[in-house]
Image 1 (tube, rainbow, N blue to C red):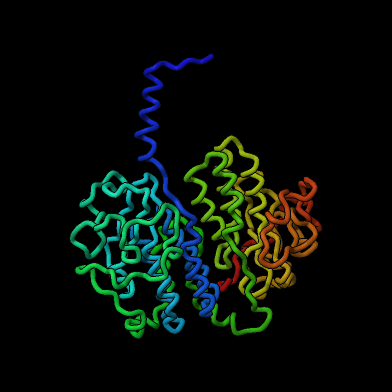
Image 2: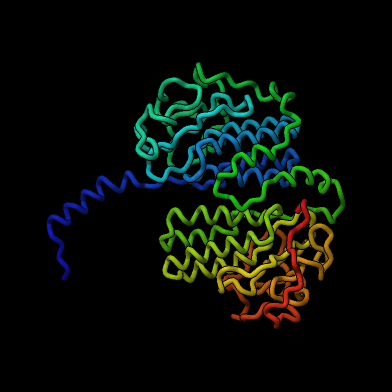
Length: 439
């Protein structure tokens, strides 16, 4: 039997008692932080702009984001609200989002933004902290009073520590959403010296013509870096919403597409590496994403799986994710990636399409047989149209997750992609798989 020395036991006990709590990560379900804003945005007619801004926004709550990224995204939320008749609910939930605690990698408080917001509605607002975070030390061991430890516009540390205008009594429970605790952004609680927040409608005329694209781009340091800037969506969405059935948007809960992989990753010991990869991954399912961004994220998933003892569940779920249909803004099929994946585990895999999408026309009115309409490595169109190796019978129901339909990345273990004329491995006849500008 292995015996441990008394000294070693004492040392391990000391580490358990002292070192571990300081390094404890405090996190949350970041996608929940914008759900109420997205619901209000959809009700106001924001269309696909709602999802694009939301993904960028909740990614700013990750520990790796810049201290002002969260505020920049809240500004983008309000910019869009002002375009939608100064929607009061959107502004209110943007104000609450601006105060949601951010993840902390070390159970220390997270630094505050040190610049003024673009919109007056955010003046004097800053994030709360989680209750489990140390109140006297900020990330990096910075003591209270050091750079970034006092919110912009204030001249003294917060009292009580960890509080914010929406929750002036102190920090909020670890992992909880501020929007579930209160529906009041707490404008009446803004401290003197931090600037008074204007009523939501008062500053609207000055900014009503500002498009949200610039504010979203300002927060591009967030980990969801593969999301294409939604400027093209802001320009094209009004036109697509006004046309007929062929312009119907088909979307999904993109977060659900990467959640099973993230769970497997966490179980395998991926820790903080799992969530950033998952966030980047599900953002690639948005219509504005590059046609190869989904495959790139699946490669990143497999790269990490190989670091974790070639975890088979992570690899299998990455292969299924690579075949999840992407959102389509026009109820047309979505173009395929036109280059080989990095990892051999993804060879021959490509996304299914949703059943409601036209299978003979791709986004932008591109006809089958044109560049981007045949998966990389195949020489003729997919048959049945809209199918993929994991679901060779055809496209899947609108909005559903492929991982809820099958747990196998290839039906019956088949190694060949389910397409006619698919025996040639390198017969790609497409030079450019880019989707239309408005996709």
